[in-house]
Image (tube, rainbow, N blue to C red; front, side, top):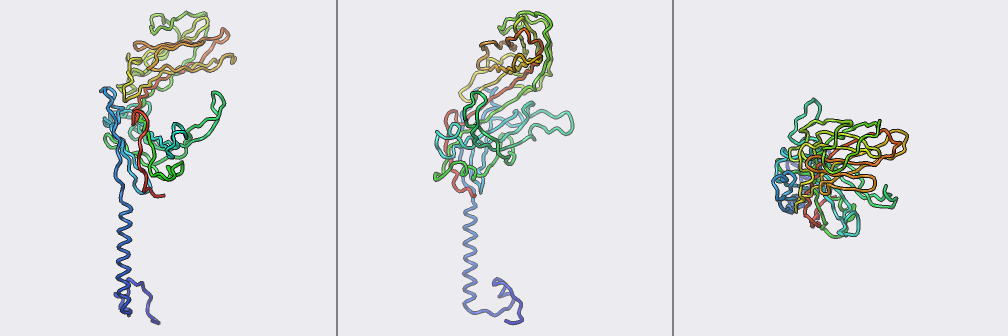
Length: 383
């Protein structure tokens, strides 16, 4: 063999190199083994079957843009793929997120409501419908605004009572979701499920929350108390509103299905010991949305008030919900009726200047399932 070039076993015959009779059998054996390994690899890489969970219908045509019909899951290589099927095309919708709460250890007593992993994908703008076209260069259309990430548990003290409690803390982004017609698709590593609690069982418990939102940008006003003002009764009627500072807002910004939270005008006035805020909406119906068996309506109007002169008072924020449109308590009252909402904040005589900020949110959530959770098999996902 001295002076002959070295070559691999697979090239021996073509190179004219001498070899023993048993060498051919060895070559055939190795070739067959390589073929077997290749077949085994391809079989192992085969995508798992889709696991699907169907959801009930919203029951109301006006809520179809929030309605999830089915959610699919499949282990594909190292990832868990998720597909959410909606009743309407994304072009007809508003900001939409799909959140997965994963009970990795199948123990309802651990985590937050049993979940140790929170994965969320979202598409759209919170302040415009998906059909909106940008009016200036450099602004992404809503359907091009896509993001995803995951959160894990963190134990921290609460702001309310200082006790230790569990909170979701965002850790890292994930690949952005894709949208095709009525379907949003996204994926995340199966290893996250193992990392945060899965041990021996190949199945985990999951619940899905698909949330649609569309919001008014905050509207700020400054109000100065210069006289005793007038007394206004908080009864959901605007017939005793005549003056005060006023801000008008642009109409038609929100999706046509949620104009009942669109703000048309904000007005601030005061009485001898009160500060009043009136909010006129684009359409009536804020307080009339029923909570269907499938879609949960939590639309809200928020008013924040902050004294500016001397720090006698404190920042206060009150939220009026569509499902409870009349609320009263110590030092405040609020009510919504027929496209108008009004708020009464008590004030000290020495508080004579205020910053007032008003905003509103349409929040519609479809839970899959409506109650509880469902089981999926996540076996086969690589590390």
